[in-house]
Amino acid sequence: MGKYVVRRLLTAIPTILVISFIIFAIVDLSPSDPTSNLPMTIPPEVRAKVREALGADDPFVVKYVKWLNQFFIAEPLNLIETSFGITFPGSEDRARVISWATRGPVIDIIAQRLPQTLWVVGSSYILGVLIAVPVGIYSAYRQYSIFDQVGTFLMMVGFSVPTFFTGLMFIIVFSVNLKWFDSVYDTTLVVSDIETLRQQLNQMIMPVTVLTLYTTAQMSRYTRASTLENLQQDFIRTARSKGLTERVVVGRHVVRNSLIPVVTLIALGIPGIFGGALITEQIFRINGIGQYLIIAIQGGDLPTVQTVTFIFAVLVVFFNIVADVLYGILDPRVTYT
Image (cartoon, rainbow, N blue to C red; front, side, top):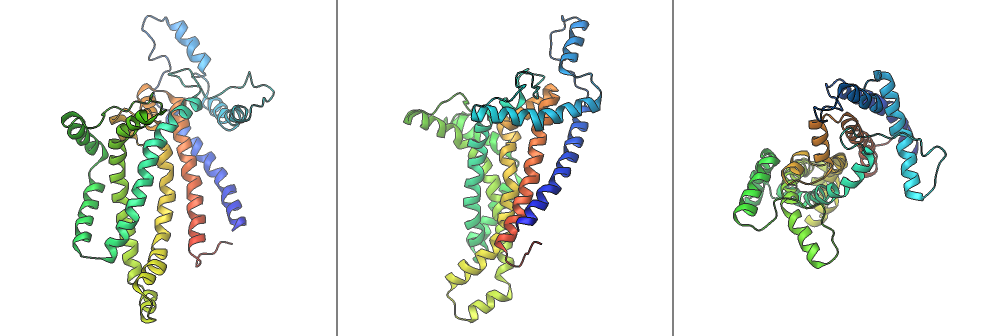
């Protein structure tokens, strides 16, 4: 197993480099100008100096190599210095990935927005998994029952209806008409006592519920299908013929084998937490990673788009490896050499 993990990590390096090149090239081809948002009264020579300072007019290869150096060397060194309070030589002259819009380091802005994304998207993902797995298992075990039919219908609706529609309906019903919850997420709120905790929970309820419904519908459908497949296997009939109780058959044999592909799916969905919910964060005005990416795309902020997209791609590659390792741990039939 150890050799397999090391080999997968080593093969992930060229994969990540190829992905970085593709992302950088595609984004760099877009007709964006770092001076497009500046006032029209600024003379062309000043705009040219701004573009030169930001490196926007450099050749593609030069820009790509600079970005690789900033992302893989400068940013990790800065993170180590910030975390452990140490200083490496040349820290003052170290070039970092700078946003064209804010003129600040992109990684610092991501670090500021990441807690909001983890609060909302992370909570909804965990809650969705905790609801979906038992619902999917019980729905499969009670196939064609009222619970299964109602649950299957709700799964289909939850998976089919887009989150932007669900979010808007929640705002209209629960915020505008009933005035139960806040429609705009206050990212400046600091939880310091019971009252601020109540306000934080109040503003989290709608976006978390919208995302939880979608996650639950997706996961429960997959869990139900996996459980139904295992309930029809020969080893389940053998376990029952040996006189094992239904609780042991379902809990020890059916659930354990059904959760193997589900755990893999859960691991593959974790990068989406860090990527943020693009549409939901826009609807509820959550200053998370998803909204930051949308704003950067709309404003033509190429360094931000390249960096955020690449981080998400790296997480996808990493958690693919995690999913493969978990699959081998949970399923003894799978061996890695």
